[in-house]
Length: 397
Image (cartoon, one colour):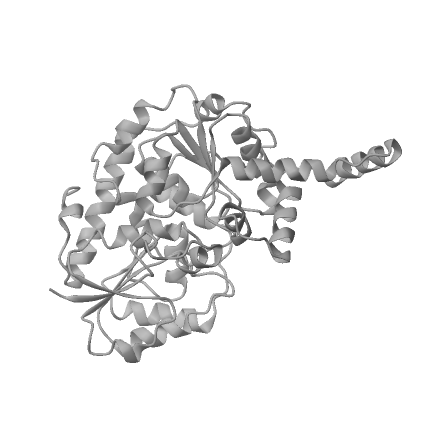
């Protein structure tokens, strides 16, 4: 069997011996538990001996010991991301490579991000050693081509192939119009352009008893759930989230502040305490991809702004909607046919989960057909590289 260097900290779960702290959780998940989705998925697609190498590894430890390098990637093609270390690693180890799910990130499809020289060198190093780069969507594909990298295919994220259920889409579609029992929200993208969406999702969740707020990051929210002592930075982060998710706007806040002052009372602390109590009651921190998927299966619906939360929810066979908010989420949803709700031009969201899902059409057969297409393209790339296609992937062919 070929010796494959696989760039990940794990295959989608924390070690049983790991001490459960927010710092350890963030460190061992690459600062976002959503990384579990593609760290697990890419290695399901080929059948070879795998050697993990983590972010920042030195080539000296691997030269002559690897036959291939496989990289489950994320939105690395963005402003400020410098991958000089990985470009150097690939050049010095100098073996054939595969990369899955490489993505560009920008707030608009109208322009490309300016990449650091080290990231440009990474693209060149990969391009010389792979049949083609498997990128997240057409936006990333066009960015690569604009930089002279032409052996590129848009294949989404390998996590869409995690479930072996060949009729996954049909199963999800059969549950689409059922009543909402409890919902899972994948959110906490604290960006100004989607504040009303994140507030809507937070309120929707707290209105339905038994619902869940799935926490992939940040550290402060995780530390709240692990019952560790909060540091000053955590308190500032939680206060910022409270202002973002609960306080509607500065004018309302100012009016309420004046009213409370005139009445000789101030309920702001009480409101913040309710917010913290809601977080403790509704939040869930995944400790493995399997536990995450199993936990979601006890919910009737899922909705959110986190793309991998949406994919894992579909894997758990529950109706799921992603609300795209940048190039990264938009191109992934498009290429993988993830059910989406556009927020362009909206300022009012549906008043119930049932209304929300009635606005989004989902064809299970088209979703399944597209998964088969993506599987075939991934299998072709793996075979061209000289690796053995796994029995898991062959199920789709």
